[in-house]
Length: 180
Image (cartoon, rainbow, N blue to C red; front, side, top):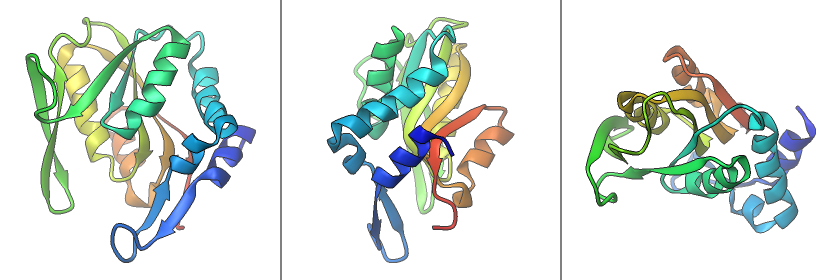
């Protein structure tokens, strides 16, 4: 694990039994509240993608917006929000995905990208991968290329990063919590 990874991982607060018993919730607010750690988080992504010819950062509603907007600014790329259904005011594409109990949907403006745009898809955490996979499908439907799917945290025991890789996506996370 590198310097950035260890610093970020140590700054993440774990809240046991929230929002329900048995869940170890990874609270990123402690990273965001510490100006030095937050800067290191954004720097980890900037160092990875600097010089990678990125056109846009697409970020998943809502915590992905925090990382994605700062990263877009630093990479001089556009910022595209992938929203929960019903939040975007213009013509959209919608993608449904499975939750533990039911389904949910994300949407993207139809004109969010030009065909061939090179995109990094960002969220705060990869758990089961459902939201990221739905967002990736939307981006691909528009004709943009996903260079990589990126998140601050991977929870590999939940299988999301593996699922994303099986769909042909490159995955990068700053840190992981395995079996914890």
